[in-house]
Structures are given as C-alpha cells and as structure tokens.
Length: 196
Image 1 (cartoon, rainbow, N blue to C red):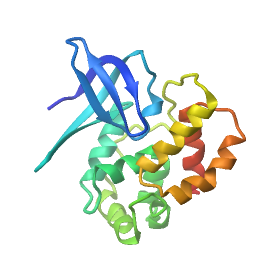
Image 2 (cartoon, rainbow, N blue to C red):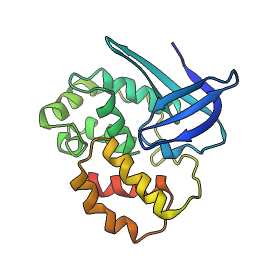
Image 3 (cartoon, one colour):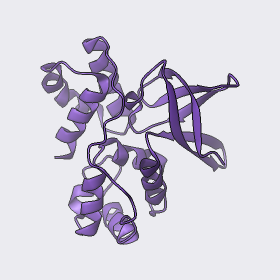
C-alpha cells in the first residue's frame, strides 16, 4: 500500500524508528538497524506494510534494494519479518547473494532464527532470484554523533531486539567498549563478529 514516506525522523529506538510526515502523523517503522537513520533529519524512507490476522506493522528501509531483498526473504518458507530484518541488519547483502549463489547454507545459519533447514530453504527459494538487485556492499547510512556509552547501550539493545541472545551480546560488550563509535558503528562491528 505504501511505497515510501518523506518526513522527519523524530525518534530512534533499538527495534524501530518514528517518522512524522508533513500532515503530522507519526509512523512506527520496524527496521533492521534503526541507527542508520539520523534523528531530527528529513528523510526518504522506503516502507512495507504487513497485515496479519491480529497485527498491522510497517517496516522501514534505507533504500529500495533493501526493501526488495526483505520481500524476497519473506517469500522463503520459515522466514518471517523478524528473521528477515536480522539478516538485513548484517548490512552484507553481497555476502547473502554470494551465499545463495554458492549454495553456502552454513553462512546463513549464523543469523538468529535461521537453522540449517531454513538456511537450505533460503538457498533453494532464492537461487537465481537475487541477480536483479543492484547491490553495493557496505552501504553506509547517515551517522550521528552521540554519547559513546549510550551508543553502546543502544547497540546492545538493538542486537537483542534482532534475536541475538543476551549471552551472545554480553560476550561482545567488552570488545565493543574498547572502541569509540556511533550506535550504527557498534552494531556493524558486532554483526561482523557474530556472523564470522
């Protein structure tokens, strides 16, 4: 129903962001990594609305390719919106495309909620269907300066909202705390450590 929303990003939380359009309506958009967006900045956010029996949710994406990839992942049996967002949060679309092209199911099992059977299903269902994406590796979204401790805290909370266990996240805290970064930067670093 919706393709995108132009508006002001008013709030950013670990699992979602709020964008206010010009009519004054604030939309809650779940996102793979909300901290790629910048608060209090006019933004163009691609959206997908999903209606289920007892839930209506909207998902926000940094660009059109991310939205297309999200929808392709949803067409895989066993992948829901939360798992799709966890896969997209790694910000390694090239790695995903290569894993599917090379039948590398083990790469996909590193994402939360993706077991061996689901990983094999992703490869089976998406083989040859990702070639049309103009994917650029490591697309960087906007960054924002913020208190580093708060940034780290937000990043750890965001990782848990993506489905990583508190134990997995706690193991990374010391490593991440040794560097100065934004929330987005911490999340990217953590995902690299979790996926490798």
